[in-house]
Length: 469
Image 1 (cartoon, rainbow, N blue to C red):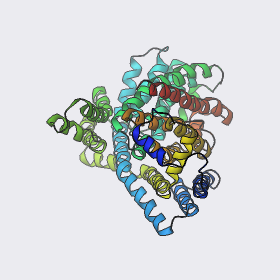
Image 2: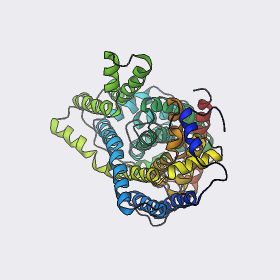
Image 3: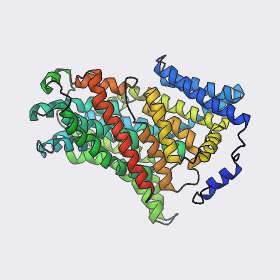
Image 4: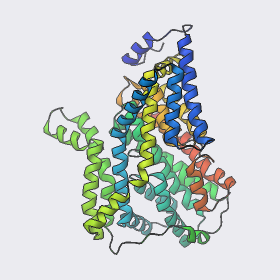
């Protein structure tokens, strides 16, 4: 056994069955875990059942096969669901409110126009990564795609450049944030399941995202645009969604400030924990306002005033905008909550400890195991969020006792695996295909290849960081 393992993990492994001590109970737990995952995969991919119901039935299958009493199984699932919705659901809802405020007040459009005015044809792909990254911080991937497609079409048409040279960088910037950077649902769920520091995960996630987005965005976009020919961008202008622009819009500085404020507040909490004495006034202030729910709540309240004033929205109009952001994310919150119930079932049935023992015997690190499990579930179900939640629940025991930065890297490795090979069972695949007017084959060569590149490159960067952090 390697001597470099942290003390708490060494203690766990010391209690685990030694090689040759594999028991009938362990076999049953392994079958239970595989059965639960198989049910989720079949129900999502073949039966087309909603992921919330699929996760609930998968957790039920896992618990029954593992021998849990049905009454305990119900309590376990609802406990996990409630805790996850309480921890993650609020952040998802607040993130949706912020994204809706930016979109409807014209703040997002102001950012796009300001950045594009300061770029040349040669630097446009790099500008698109920057725009997508800024707009993608508070928005879900699907919302970001709908928002950016008109921009991509307009820029490609005006500059007379191939659609993919402009579009791939924008999609890469959106997708890498969706997989690695809170407050997106997947990364938040991983942070919650692994009980790792959100601020450190956010900072390292941004660090990993930069080189990954460059390689899978402008560089791959320029490469693939020469090999996959799409119709001229003007043919797609009619398909672009249109929104009624407000008469007046917030300033560029105000819009960017609202995007970055929650990031700064959450990072401030991590800085306080590292640099300030616990119990000092500065520590208490930064620790409180940097708590994710408080940081997002403060940002939304400030954005209502700043962005609403900038767009000259009435109080009733602002109320409609904020309220209108919630129905669209109800399903996402339910899926994340059901994932928490599935994770808790893994824990209470004993599957978690069994997987830890099995991985330790095979000498797999939490980084590699988390990435591989997420890749498998992502390819099978098409859902990055389901892949992240399931993988995080399985490797959670292996993260106990790891240093904060190493635990955060495990969460990022899982998020990285959840991006792997988006194909025909992923709603994002069809969204991109239709908006860009591509065939299935073209979408596989462009979007699917880009997603795989994002996953592989980000995981390579994470492995590199794990040796120095």
